[in-house]
Image (tube, rainbow, N blue to C red; front, side, top):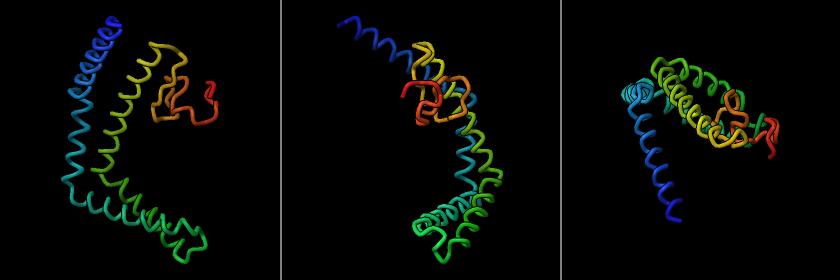
Length: 148
């Protein structure tokens, strides 16, 4: 039992070292810079607040579907707000930095999973991640080829 405990401690120490490398990486630095810029950008914060408010209205309208009297107006407003939000330079830069950070974490997860076994399920959160035989948490009912 002592060997397993010592081995476990060694693995956790190496995992901490890996985490530190990730935190100190250029990818993580860019993510933090983009996040900080997003938080400092007043217009971006206004767009986010507007979108969140509209999303609440959208969810209310969705309960009744197309029969809600404001259905078309709310759907149009939400689409327009989402588009304006997505096209805002600071928001777009943050989303790109976030995507790059997630890709790095996904790649690391796949490498660790494949080192154990080709059959290990690696939840990357990206159903199109090509490096894993079974990414995305296998919620597709076995379409990735694994046994669910």
